[in-house]
Image 1 (cartoon, rainbow, N blue to C red):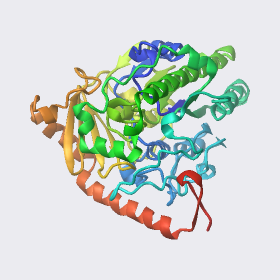
Image 2 (cartoon, rainbow, N blue to C red):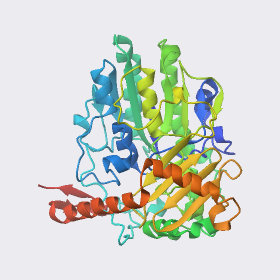
Image 3 (cartoon, helix red, strand yellow):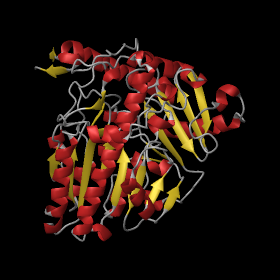
Image 4 (tube, rainbow, N blue to C red):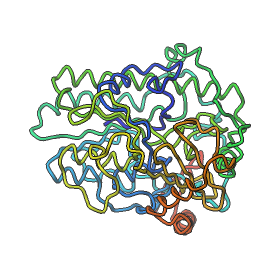
Length: 465
């Protein structure tokens, strides 16, 4: 499994992007199944990745944001599979609920990633919502972090090299099934790239389809995120440059994935290996005036998912609503391994293709907004409930880029909203969970004050006691 960081599903040739070239992802999709209604459980790194590790949605594990100032000693997919005779390997980024070395994997190679985000992000207050500095830890303004630089892939190159070597050597030597999870830092911001790729995409300096002037950009939650990240200071040059660098990095990622597939083919392992490509969350890339993640819009909350190999259909585009908890359950079914009954999700192999009645859910309680937001996708419809703010409804089949909010414009039958809100209540009480999250976040904020931290540059901190 290759899990990238912050890959918008729209920015690939599979989705028909007019500039970007992702031939290796396209080959995987042609040989397998592409899931076009697949969502992250939360559009933020630590909540999404912790849920992946633990099989528990953020409201169950209470990993609400990018601070793990209170680590959670919870079992992981790597540890549980390992105990059942499957050799488990984690390579690259972690951003999980507890120390990486305690997760129970057969091998843990976190490389550049910290063992645990303690304290991690300290800009987590929701009342009031802070304004995040425009200046990064390197002293460079975020709206200038794009373009060609030397060694732009210094974090990911060693991870791909390690993975390729492992597949060519250790994978062949093992006398047991194995599961390798490669976690990249790209195409996550900053959008620095190589000179070669920057020049390749000179023509790709487009602007987002819907910018900050669109009515949906005026929604209070979207407005809060824009203020928090100061994205209104991004001018047209910055927007074009960021999108160009991002597309170049997706191209690079695609080429590295092709190299790994080639290793499997050269070593005779391709036909009996399941290959999965996905991402922890998407990236707004200027849509509705937003950057990065944290939004429930498709560009942020939906993620690419390709599965190819034994047990999966070939050349299929599947529109059944799924989320990353279902993907995790899928891993267990591939190995016919036992999965804890209380863990969320259903194996994708057990679901009907293009099932319009099946629902998936995503939630967000993290930085940048005063609300908690909840997404329900079922069939053509996507419903977003925001605590204390207007709900949103989109017909994704007819309006995949979400230009029309059917709730605000009263175009559609309100019964759709009632039905989808009932689905949401089947997962949790959203208002009650807002208050529960708020209490936990306030506890985190208090720990920041009393826990003994040395402030470092750019708002980062180190626990000293």
